[in-house]
Image (tube, rainbow, N blue to C red; front, side):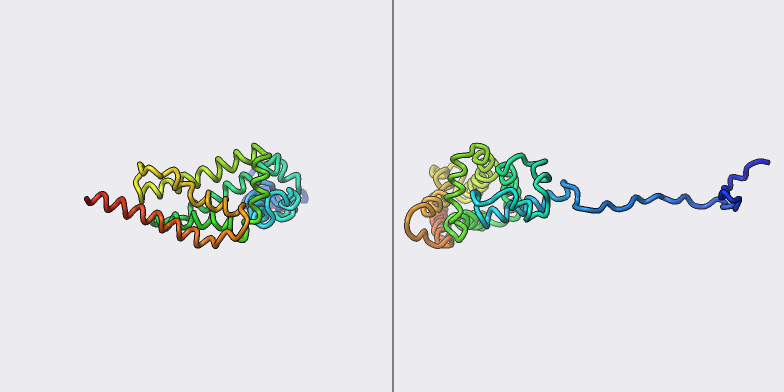
Length: 218
């Protein structure tokens, strides 16, 4: 007899032509895969670095904060320096993407970030970071490439818009607020309020810009 295309159970019951049933794999239990935890790890590293500083922070602290094992971290980042460097780069990229507005507004935001990190409440962590940078070339290079140079480039861009890209003191002005803040953070005595340093710097830049405008109209 010719086959009708129908299927039967072992006992002979005719099943007919039914829809094909898709086999669904059971969900995997346990922790998410390592790549799914990257954001959590970097967020924990950045937050704990800000809270405890470089020298007091361990990779185990970061693992605990992110809810992962040490092996998960070391599979991607071989050292604490490499992990923190990427975390700080990501935080810097995020901040840079959020800073928009007129040049003076952008400078106020960038200067405020620098001042808060050096002479604000978090400034007490600066000496430990500077010590680590001097002792660790990998960390120093990562901070330079991932944080310091992009920040200086952004300051230069906004200053160039306000004062002109050929302003003779442009290089000095780029480092004005970071230099003043780091010096005050390390010198004895009260470093002053971050907002005062930012305000004074913006007033200086505005004065230089006014002088440039006056000279252009003569």
